[in-house]
Amino acid sequence: MIKLLLLVIHILFFYICALFQSLWGLWFFCAELIIALFLWLLTWVFRKQIHLSIKEPMIVVHKNECVSNPFYVKKEPLQPGKIRLFCTLKNPYSSTSLRLNLQDPLLFTAKDCGFFELSLHKIWIYDWLGLFHRKSTKENTTIPIVILPDPVPIFLEMKQASQGSQDLKIETRIGQVGEPSFEIRNIREYQEQDPLHHIHWKLSSRTDTIWVKDYEKEQAKTPLIQACFTPQDELEDARFYQKVYSILLGFLIQKQPVILWWTQDQNDTAYRIDHQRELDHTFANLLAHQALSPVTLPGEPPDLVISSQ
Image (cartoon, rainbow, N blue to C red; front, side):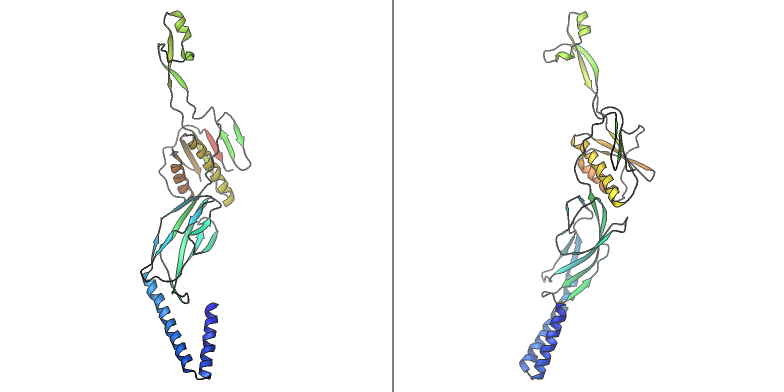
């Protein structure tokens, strides 16, 4: 609109100069034409000097975190004016898509967990005054964006019970998962630092020596959590991912490793997770539908079953 207005003003200016036979006005008009031609040719030079690079091959963020612009435009000493990047953000597994004009370093704030692809379609390179621009296209400029669930833990007491919720079904099996048991390793003579409740009273009553029970702590059992995922709509899928992520995070915060048994489309895979970093990596690949390096499927029933149906 501004360019059209400037063109009309210059046409009227040229008409007035010709009408009154103003030589200075005609010279001024010719100078403006030369400057405009120079700026237009600069856009061609700038397009040759622009180098587009990708900051990171994959963007992984949590919900409610800002997604930054993954593209970096390197300029030469003769810096062009404004550069506009036109992209499309879409979910490859649904019809969700959004067109973006990347002018700010921050793209958007993630609201729901999921997997998206950011594809760069064209670049507009402007001259110093912003009057002219030249279009440039780049190939292989699709960036995957993985939005992880909100890192809010859910702490479960793994008791012999089952509980349900409005959106998910959660079942637990037997006893306190991860709680260590104690067995007698040895019986030895009493020492001053030994607690009194470790005294073997029956044996000590038959001898003249006080004996104590020396316990050996067994290694805590790693919880086996099965997540039965059936794809539904985007909202329900996001709620399921959030629930599973929060439950696993609750165990990891308590320094309790877990084994995730993921069931989807009649395919079973298991992953051992020891830290939150491994949890983020696992969910990033699950959301992106990328293959992981699973562990051997356990031969025992799960301690916790989470189902989306």
